[in-house]
Image (cartoon, rainbow, N blue to C red; front, side, top):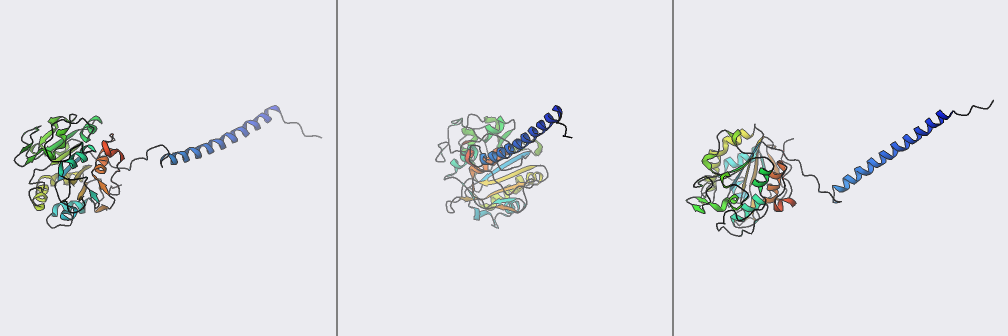
Length: 306
């Protein structure tokens, strides 16, 4: 007896099932293709690669010293405290300044560009409105300040006064950085929870090793910022120590040290970095835009604790 013909309902069921199988296969193929396109996009086919992972500290304090090469400080018996920070934190062994003399380097590290500054002459306050670390951090809803040793008064745009020099304080050159965010160093809080998100500390011409010895600067750092460094180790915060330039005898290779809870103790990085890379790293910590040449710079990596 011949087999009964399939019912219309069972025949349509098989058709629907076959269509589902084909759609599933197509979806899988499309997903693989999309994944491949994503890989291509991250390797020069139209999309900027993702930034390297950097931490987001509650507070960052950047301290800038003057005119000394890497080998004059790192490994030197004249700088025991700085070397203790390097061994307890991270040292960049191939960190470089941009140029000579001092002032253009400060503008480079703060705004990603020397802003046409080529010497140490005092600038006209507010001569530039270019983006910079302070304007970017503020736009991102975070706080900013600088603490300047021997500054004659809060917000003073004085060119030079005793051991104070405006050439080491680039924020005064920007109209988009309020002058009242520039404090004397006496205003540096003892309650570190009251620190802004990002701040710079600039010692005076003796404390920064410009006119005085490496030992003098090292002792100043220990006396004035050891308590913050110790606190940063347990309070999701960071101390970043760098130099504006070398002594003109070492290819502009400078010490740069990171110390804090997010830094792997005893780590080093031999990757070549410069002031623009350090600026980029600070910007990426808070998801800001990128000022000047920091847009094409890279994040400091290989030193962060997981």
